[in-house]
Image 1 (tube, rainbow, N blue to C red):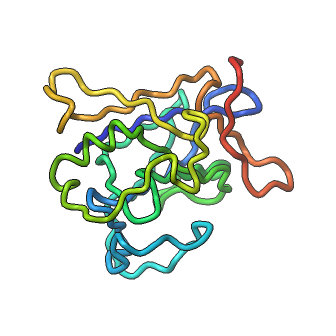
Image 2 (cartoon, one colour):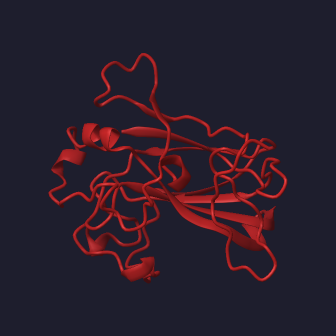
Length: 207
């Protein structure tokens, strides 16, 4: 199922849009396979703590980067991800700040956030009824069972999903993630504090 993923990022210290940040996203495909790790399959439990594993192949599908615009927003055209053993359906997000865009890509700077965004159970169950999602025989982990999702809705990265008008039934349907508001009430990401390894996403009141 095609997916338009729109996210907005705000500096937690100023409540201003986080402009010029490099945003990486990556996810598994419709049957739970990651590019770079096809031989791992979808039935191998992820490593404890999400530790990095060396790639097993050179494939690079469903991995991409873009630079936030003047409003701190970004849009990716991707697919609704499937699932693999031990994890709820999710997309990984990493935010780089303080670097610059060069002819060879984004260089320098530092990572200020590494996290994930999640999908409501209703949307996952709907997608699981259509091909190729319905060919996945791995037992699916729900949001409540996931070891990383904190259970606090948007605070912990639960996306606001809507279906594009004119696409007919919700299944298979075209999923469209609405932009997060820029009023400091969804993903609030800021640059690294001195001596800090990372800055977590926070939910604050209006700026």
